Amino acid sequence: MGGMTIRPILIHPDPRLKKRCAPVTEITDAHRKLAEDMLETMYAAPGIGLAAPQVGVLERILVMDCVKDPEAEPRPMVLINPEITWASEETRVYEEGCLSIPDQFAEIERPAEVRVRWLDLEGREQEEHFTGLWATCVQHEIDHLDGKLFIDYLKPLRRQMITRKMVKLKRDRERERVAERARG
Image (tube, rainbow, N blue to C red; front, side, top):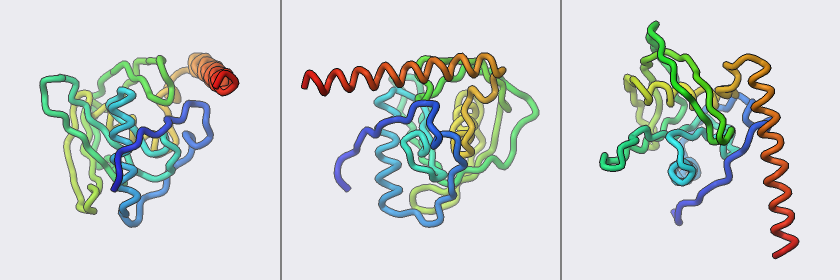
């Protein structure tokens, strides 16, 4: 399959981050390579979740690993065509961030627990009940597949402020790249 590749992560605002992703109809080696690359990219970032649209692929695939303890065994998960089959009425508030919106965080309220069904890389159906950080993470990543970002839950003014910061960040990064090339 070749080595794993760290893929560039799209930064908001990018139209691809606002699109609803297409379901995966057949799991191919390209999807397996994508999943490997996404896990590599997520760990390198570092993050606990990453959805395919964040690396420019508009398909319903996400990866996550919410094991925070460095002593604990990592638990990389790949979810293809995930869907929430049940959500608790009880909610939890977590401070969320996003690899596509660097260094910006906000308290977001979501169901405290969810049950999710998905296909694994072998095409087998899986189902799991998630709680705590796992529940927050899987909902955040499924939102990405629907073209929704965590800042979409915020009041318009706060959302616009974060968007302006991201526009500036992208401009600054582009300027650095150009300067780098000129020096190179």
